[in-house]
Every structure is written in C-alpha cells, then in structure tokens.
Length: 119
Length: 144
Ligand SMILES: Nc1ncnc2c1ncn2[C@@H]1O[C@H](COP(=O)(O)OP(=O)(O)O)[C@@H](O)[C@H]1O
Ligand SMILES: [Mg+2]
Image (cartoon, rainbow over all chains, first blue to last red; front, side):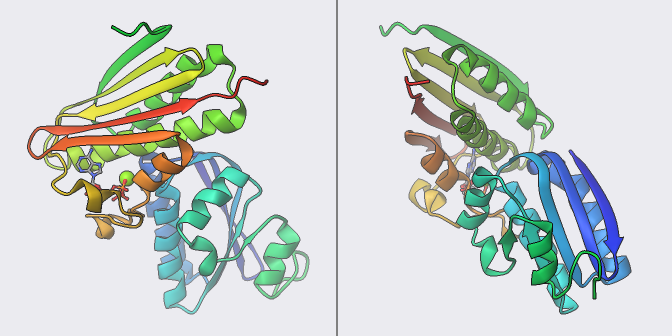
C-alpha cells in the first residue's frame, strides 16, 4: 500500500495505491493528517486509480480526512473507476460529502478549476 | 457427515498485518473453481471485514488467535472466521448497518452489512467472554 502526495496549484493530489484495509490505513492516516494540517489543505483529489482492493476501512479513512479538511472550509473529490470500490464508498454515503468522479478533468471541475490552470 | 471437495484451516495471531494474509489464503483456496474477478473481490472483502473485526473488536483487550476455516463443495465456498475474544452481547444491534461500538476509531459500522451484501449467506454466533464465529457462504457462477 502506498501514498504519494502532489500539489498542482492549490489542489493537493493524494495518490493511493495497493490494498486499502485497516492495517494499511494506519500509516496512511498519519501521513495524510500531517500534510493536511501542515499545509491547511483546502482542495483535495483522492486518486483511487491504483487501489486494487478496499474494504470498509477506506470509508473511515476518507470521512475522517474530510472532517479535517472541512474544518478549514475545504473540498474533496474522489477519483475512482472501480465499480466495487464505488459500491463500498456509497454504502458509507461518502458521495454525499465528496463527489465521486471518473476522470481527472471532472475532478478539477468539481473543485472549481482545470488541470492546467488550477485556481 | 457431509463430504467436502476441499478444506483449509489457517490460524494466525490477531495482528493487523494478517488481514492481507487471510485474503490471499481465501483467494488461493477458491482459485481451482476459477471464480470471476468480481466473485473473488466479494469474498476477499467479506473475509477482510470478518478478520478485521476479530482483531480490532474480538481482541481489543488482549491477544489471541484468529481462525479462518474454508470448505468447498461443488461450486459453493463456505468460510468461517472465528476468535476466542470478548464476544458480542447484542448480535442484532451489532449487525445493524452503521452501528459501531468504536466510532472514535473511524470505523464505518458497515462490516456486517458488507459481508451480507457480498456473500450469499451470513450467520453470526457469539458468546460474551467466549468468542465469535462468523459463517458465510458463496455459490460461484458455473458459466465462465
Ligand atoms: N469478532 C467480534 N468480536 C466482538 N465484537 C464484534 C466482533 N465483530 C463485530 N463486533 C461488534 O459488532 C460491531 C459492528 O461490526 P461492523 O459492522 O464490522 O462495524 P465496525 O467494525 O465498523 O464497528 C462492532 O462495532 C463490534 O462492537
Ligand atoms: Mg468491522
């Protein structure tokens, strides 16, 4: 399981990869909270393109980070194509607070910008 | 005595790194039936939820072993995940969607709901102070 953080303008991209379960969520949560808190992250794309497996631990991870980001009035988007992962996220009503989209372009649009000319 | 085509028993200590091990073992056990990717993901997700529950809830205080017992009969895979942990006092409440006894740990309260949705059947037996056994089954599609 991996995490890579990138910044494009004011948008933070959090690339997750591998298997996302209770075990792998522990270090990822710690790392994300550090970045979110340090940079007062306000616009986030959680990129699930390289996540091969996720169980309900992923719901807790996302909703927990959303709560942190929403404290600074921030917004999050989930980029995910996998039907299984989407189904699990929807069981947790994640889509009610963060839109789930299938392309990077849609993700930037939801945050009010574009990939090449972010806000 | 019912005859199974194959069985597998794995036992490991309640360490979170073993959640992945349990998923891999069940995947390998089901492989001879040539399940679809979707069926495999369903079983992996259900096992992951049950094993995580044994580790984080069953053995929340203290340690112990988790057992995953798999049986195969024709196209059906039976999976049993058991612990000798704290047990569940109110199974009906525990199985309600979104119920969690540990909201402060960012648990979604959807483990049992996912097991129910992704498998064909789910049965939970538990005794306070003795442990919990989760029994699930999934019939794989024959047309592949
Ligand atoms: N093996 C177990 N031993 C003890 N309690 C359990 C076990 N499995 C589940 N539970 C109880 O059932 C509740 C619901 O489980 P679940 O649906 O997986 O949600 P979550 O794990 O997110 O809390 C748990 O919060 C816990 O109180
Ligand atoms: Mg659970």
